[in-house]
Amino acid sequence: MNAKPLGWPGIVRLGLVQSAIGAMVMLVTSLLNRVMVVEYALPAALPAGLVAWHYMVQLSRPVWGHGSDQGNRRTPWIIFGMALLALGALVAVDALPALAVGSAFGYVLAITGFSMIGAGVGAAGTSLLALLASQVAPERRAAAASITWIMMVFGIVVTANVAGALIDPFSLPRLAMVASGVALVAFVVSWLALLGVEQRRSAAVDEAADDAPVIDFGTALREMLAEADARQFTIFVFLSMLAYSMQDMILEPFAGLLFHFTPGQSTQLSGTQHSGVLAGMILVGILGSAFGGGTPASLRRWIIGGCLGSAAALLGLAMAAQVGADWPLKANILLLGFANGVFAVAAIGAMMGLAGAQGPARAGIRMGVWGAAQAIAFGLGGLIGAVGVDAGRALTGDTPHAFLVVFAGEAGVFVVAAWLALGVTRARAPVQGIRQQEAIA
Image 1: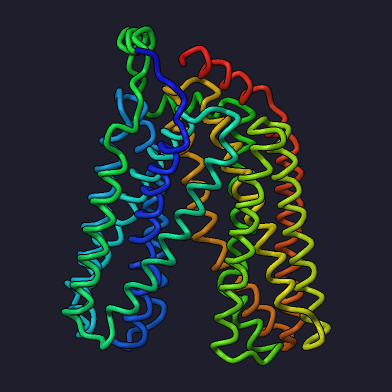
Image 2 (image 1 turned 120 degrees about the vertical axis):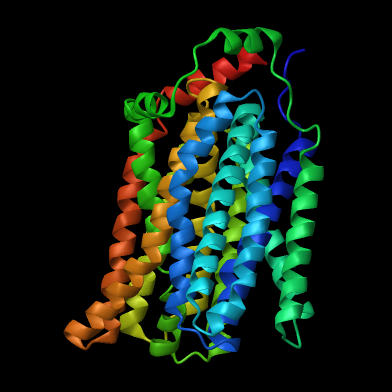
């Protein structure tokens, strides 16, 4: 039986899995962060360090991707990752009482929980993207990337609102109940969404896979990194996501220090930015499919436009640091989010095409390497932005100038990423991968 490209219902079902991942990650990176710092008066560096550690654990993504490449199906890897993620979230919550009294056991338990969270995100997320790359038709990739990421944001928003309503008045047993409910619902939803969605490969492909020698992880990784296109795309992913995340820790302090926003007003800026991100994702999903589909040329235009738009918005923030209260800050933040959403979704679409460049049996390790590059960038980006501002203020005593330098530097990284995208998305590899997938189908 020949495999057919994944239809819209199947894409939406995989989007539900992505939303479940987002829901559980939000539980530990946002809600648990607040509880540690506010309710338990723990140092803010503790949850920040644990979140950074979960990104470090995601360096294992290539290993998970290679494992799913070697099997006949990716669904078991996704379900295993979701189970590991859910259990890790509960372990992290269980560590709170011991952390509150300074017990060494609490630190061990928390590190264990966040290690499980990082490994679960790596296993489930990498295999999910590899499944999308293998079974989504080329002309639907831009829309598929938009759908899955919009649903992830939707899952985060819904979980934040529901968990926030249920957790008051706060108590540890109530937190444990809410966390258990979120983890259980997310796992069950993802399991039900995955039932029967993965298409069987053709008999010819199965026979070829059975006859092909098993390639060890080191060999597969070396083969991938030997390709110039794959190496350059890895650098692009790292640089673009580094620039994407550098403003995460400084945007709200920027609004408070220079524009005198209240905590509530500065928090609303995050909502403004995410609204822009969603608008950019939706635009690429609709117009990207209607005009040019998921072709490399179409995706290249969206990626470069999104990176340059992000650079322009960041240069606007650099100017805002000098102009002050007269600058239209909210409109600037909205533009930044919009451009971020455009480039991010288009880059994911290009990633799907490049992942299949050597056939479906190599999609997992490629997604794993790029996911690891993204995890490193996210872990470093916020740190570099915050340290850059702190260092600038300490050396010069000029807060506006410190923000100007960091935002301008971030814009420069986006320009370099756009230049790299001009080369990597022009490559022949995605076209070859599309042809191979069409032959398999």
